[in-house]
Image 1 (cartoon, rainbow, N blue to C red):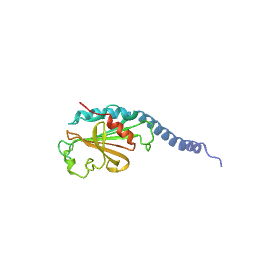
Image 2 (tube, rainbow, N blue to C red):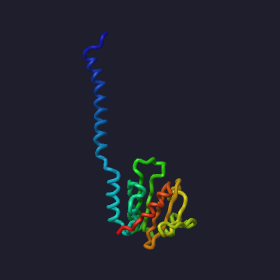
Image 3 (cartoon, rainbow, N blue to C red):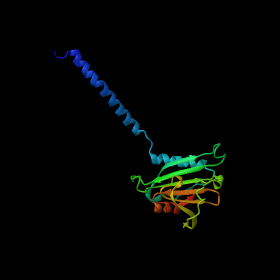
Image 4 (cartoon, rainbow, N blue to C red):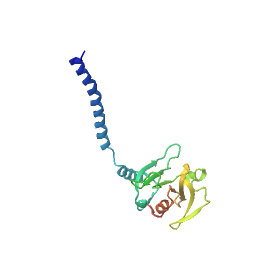
Length: 185
């Protein structure tokens, strides 16, 4: 027996309902993806906001290292754990369009934590490999920060008590970043 007129309509409706729902979901995703902020613009905005909060002048590269761009800014502000006036600024620069494993990023971390000297986490604690970069003494170690990933870290404590660590998988990029560091006014 052939399907009835109502059975045919029910079949078409059973197909159209999921198709219209899926089309609506795709349309919503397209609209939302256009509303995302530009990661580079957002990072610059976050850095400007962080600079107004920091009680110490940040050391930033005069020029972004080797054509890279700032993509991430993390500002740790005072809390009960760190103390009432301890700040840390963590910046990540990357070469846009580069491959994540190609050594195309640099992390720049700095803090005014005076208690850092008393902890094992002090990046300047291991002074086994001192290097001179741009006329200043930095301490080099293999691995990036505490995660000890492939790469290199350079650390230094400045006279004003600010500790700076520059790390990344590409030592030449790390050294060029250190060479271009300037103290912000």
